[in-house]
Length: 340
Image 1 (cartoon, helix red, strand yellow):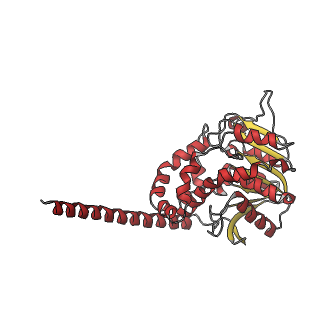
Image 2 (cartoon, helix red, strand yellow):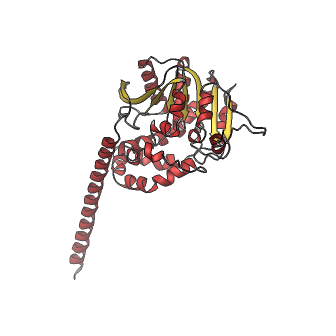
Image 3 (spheres, rainbow, N blue to C red):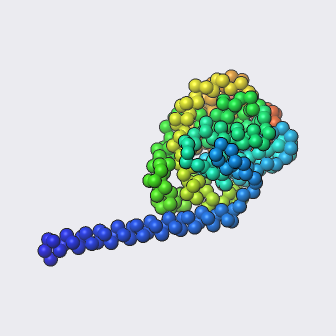
């Protein structure tokens, strides 16, 4: 075989491999899209919708009394507060509104703006105004704590009490933000979310959730309330990636304003949180917010509202969390709560 023939053969094989790759990618994208549509059919909205600030927000409302707003973390949806039992506990004595943040659950996430915590807070505030809610007690978990803090900083007249769970507040380096950056990009990110990222997310989801709950076990009913496939939809992966990519800059922008928080602020973190360092963030925030309360919960990780939901409900209601006779601020572990 002469050189020209060899070159043609190599080119032909390369073309075949490229073609097969394109076909494989297209088939994967089609399968991912079908899975997403199936997930939405099998998990219809449980609540109602509001059209505010150019975004369609899905929310669930229960109970009556003093208003409480629940803002979920990254990767999940408002159902996380149902799975933890916190929503139902609070609804006994309060009017509770849990909202899917833009791009999560059944809420939309238009591409006409950067959905920073500040932008999300603006949309949520418009939703609260539409619902006639003022002077709310606002609870935020993880990324939701950043949004809750932005809401309190920008609209302090409408936040009567702030309860922050496992939050990220200062611009410390996060590897997940660096990994998320390409997935958050237009075009390139779109292609990834329907192919490579879709496959990787399915392979790593169980491990990621275990890390969120560690050292506690993932509750048996967690995935019975939160659908895996809803969490893995390309649109929700995009929202997750964008939020992670915006975290460090958003924390940097907000850090100098924390001293402006004048409403009662309760800061809660799990002592063994492997997602957000409780000392670098929650303990530091306590030092920057005059009059705030800080409780670190031993034997608990990032999903603190699952570990001690009744204690979180008490904090929302204005009841101080119990302090043991130890030097550190702490409340009982999940096991202690179950026997309380």
